[in-house]
Image 1 (cartoon, rainbow, N blue to C red):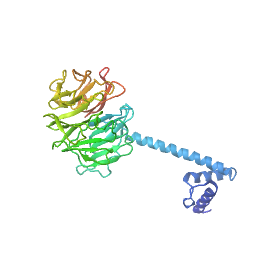
Image 2: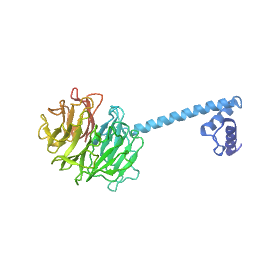
Image 3: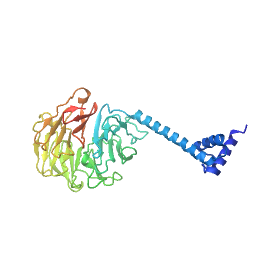
Image 4: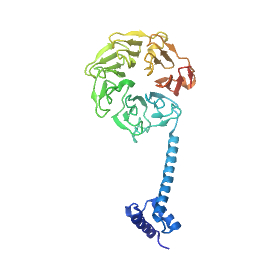
Length: 390
């Protein structure tokens, strides 16, 4: 019997000379070698080239199919529901089926089917990450989706800030280190200047104009934590910042100079009207307020929201389809106004069990009347047409 190594060399020379196989050590690929052996046994040398090409193509097709099945099994193994402690939530403005959820201990999850199934997208986590000395998934404290290029998503986590430009497939690190108390509004990515982002943290606001490659300081001059940010969509040099215990500040020169426009209290959430940016809403520790002149004058709003709820407004969000429709979220309730905040009603839906455990995020489906709520019990969808949970 001819030794195996001599058979392999003979196959390699034959494959290289006749069919252009791989030249690495005169070795054919696995599929080409199998094809040559097959054809030698079946046809000897009659129509040899056609036989080997056809058989190689068949074997490669089988290999590709097996790879696809393996990938599907891998994806299915990662698919899960964000079953606890959702901290942040954003919806693709161009594709309402695409939702990102930031969680306390599962990292970032993504759904492509309106929340029916979820896959972890945690390629942003360094392999050697440690949290309090132990390997862990850092908590995701906020998410921002770029409204111009929605496949660009920013993740703020306990161990830094990260960016993806392809919907979570690949990631770039923008900032390292625990960032303390951080909050940023979805409007903090400029509609007119993509790549401009303001990042609020303890004692400082950082600014980037190139998508996070470089940062400069745009400080309010206050030492307390910045807990809310909103960017004027029509005048991107105008930014609103909520500071713990010190009210709201405004800059019209991209952070060069700041002016206090609402004193005392803590603006936990700030929203700027997309059609008329002189209209700004804020939920503060002193209640719910609105301005129609860019912050020069403020009026308390909240008729219909119990007084005990108003200091606990954690998030405000405007409907992308109906400018006068606004939602306000507290720990356990959601309130809706259809006239720009003049009057409110509490959405009546089933708030029992884990669903009612600490609301923390809210999003509006841009294609329907559904709203998504992130809570300590997961992500839930509410059909605002009939006030029934789905």
